[in-house]
Image 1 (tube, helix red, strand yellow):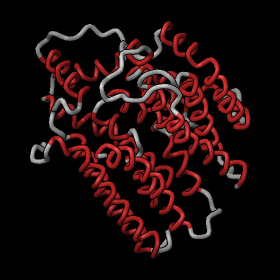
Image 2 (cartoon, helix red, strand yellow):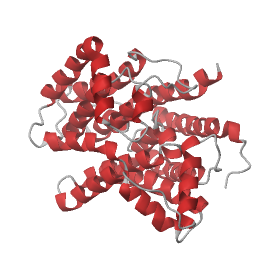
Image 3 (cartoon, helix red, strand yellow):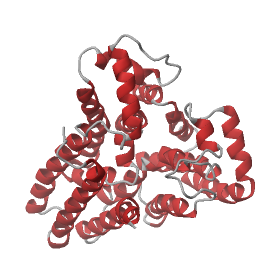
Image 4 (cartoon, helix red, strand yellow):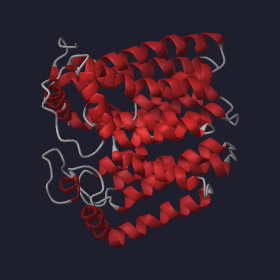
Amino acid sequence: MFDFVPIESYTTIYFQMLLFFLMATLLHSFVLAIDDYKNIRFVNYFGHFALLFVVLYIGLRPISGVFVDMTMYAYSFERFQENNPLIVTEDYAFYWFMDFCSQIMNVETFFLVCALLYIVPLYILSVKWFGKYWYYSFFILVGSLSFWAYGTNGIRNGMATSFFLFSLIYIDKRAIMIPLLILSCFFHKTMILPTMGLALTYFNNDSRNYLKGWLLCIPISLIFGNYFVEFFANIGFDDHRIDQYFTDQIDEGITQTGFRWDFLLYSATGVYAGWYYLFKKNFQDKLYQRMFNIYLFANAFWVLVIRANFSNRFAYLSWFMLGIIIIYPLLKGGFLKEKNKSIGFVLLGYYAFTYLLTVILVRS
């Protein structure tokens, strides 16, 4: 356990370490070509060091009220150990997994296993898709705005998103992909939304249609947004805390509601990236086009309910893909002249937003 780290600084130290990783990466990206032997050696050695740090730092964090949901999971785990389990009515796979773990390990090991299941799939897909340049993809994923929160609080939701992304490795092997998608949905039922988006791409994978739909959702939300908030609250989308998300019960930490233009602009970075790569640079990759369409589909739903309290929880159903949407064509495409430097600037800009919201504005 990282008990020696002050709990009030635990989250900040994570982002400071990622800042260190970023600075080291930028140094190499500005002085070496991406295919230079020294650069490849650096990103592989340094990447594995980053992987080890992220897994251990998240997996061995203290069980503390600072990570609010973590204490709830610890309580549930202890009830399973005492043969006094919760009555499970949703997310069955996660609680079956918790029940199994409670019989063979302690709660600290359980959270480490959760961290492994959350992080390692992102490492594997980065290696599968990008080979020796996997570190750039891995960094942008673990440096995403919501990554830390869903590794330490929304744990089962975070694991479910990793299973979803991992399933896309097997996009041409449905016998493997479909069980992984089912597992994702049974770990957290909100993953039905991106899974529906993936299914829809098999009927219509034209990104122009998804772009038009996403853009159309903005004025619709501006005019009829409250109707959609009430509609989805009534049908009970999301977990048992749906009433809290959609109604007026606002946590102390939530200081702004209404139409979140700041979050919309953040989401729009992925929309612009996909449009730029696919239509301006004519990037031809069916998997990327499919992922971009899933992102647009899931994000469009969030735009409709953007006024809901905790709307970032719904935004996460698309945001977990944002890093891949931005970095995938840069690593796969051949349209950059100074590829390593360009990737460095993209990583800098992407992480700067995360650092601003999680470190700088929190202190001010």
